Image (cartoon, rainbow, N blue to C red; front, side):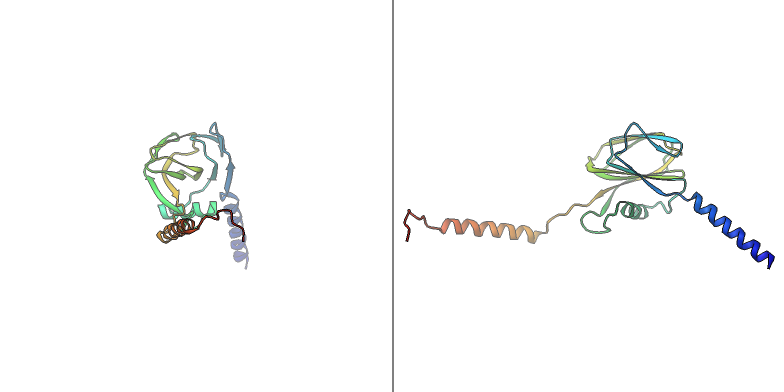
Length: 186
């Protein structure tokens, strides 16, 4: 009985220690490029983002593009398909250093940077153009990878364009067939 109680107390203390050390997502609205705190470090970056979410002190796994896309969709409350969903633009693997730069290969408005024990999620309201250089410095641990995504915008279907053109043609025909009034009131 004593060993069972001792084991239960040990499990409880281990669970409490794990939950106390677990990382949480923290939002940094309008984050200054001059720096924002991540643990005991100050991270600087450019160009200016609308929002940054920080997950510091634990790893998110796995780090494949689909899993990170799911994390971004959850954190930012994005749909998983259709307008507003994400499309993978660029991937960088086996990176190192606490500072550096990333040249984005396509238009991007979500960027996930994974470093040693954490993740930074950057969001821009207006997408960054392809070829934009994203610079960063002061990461608490070395960068290991990044994932860049673009949110899919709504594109009208061909039938929508067909209905628009049909309506405009109908209005033009009606306007052309209408006879002038010549000021007669009957």
